[in-house]
Image 1 (tube, rainbow, N blue to C red):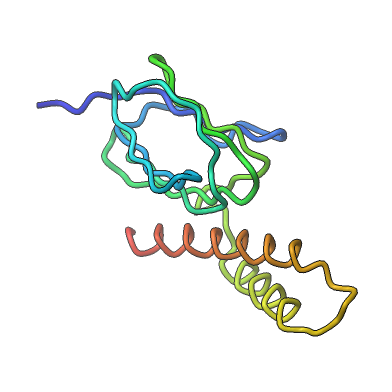
Image 2 (image 1 turned 180 degrees about the horizontal axis):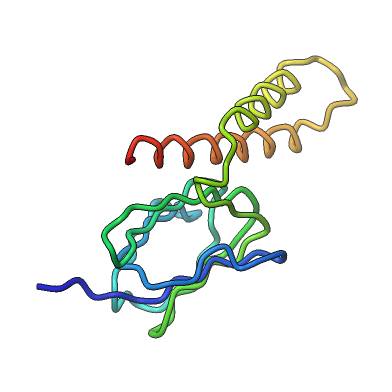
Amino acid sequence: MARKEFQLEIVTPERIVYSDKVVSITAQAEDGRLGILHDHRPLVTKLQIAPFSFITQEGQEENVAISGSGYLEVTPQKVTVLCQTAELSHEIELERAQEAKERAEERLQASDEAIDYSRAEASLKRAIARIDAARAQRNDD
């Protein structure tokens, strides 16, 4: 039995990160992990800063780092992800992401009152999402 496809668009203010047919999506929503297949019921949900994956029509798993606030909308025609920032895993420089993680961890461990801890935590989450997406793709190759 052939897998049914549906359109996925991942859009940031700067660009369309991805626009093509897919057969499934896995995302981290605020309420937990979410899997989407063809004919999923319509919904809108807020996405967590986390890796996002999908299976292409060719059967390849692709990983994306959703590293900024975002929303996922499911309609009968397509799934749209609107987010501040997103990177396909092959665009992520793993070394830079690891350095960003280390910097964020250092800021969080410092006892300096001038440090914005919520900003440092957000930086750490973004770096971890980027690292996880990049590593997941490299493990699949």
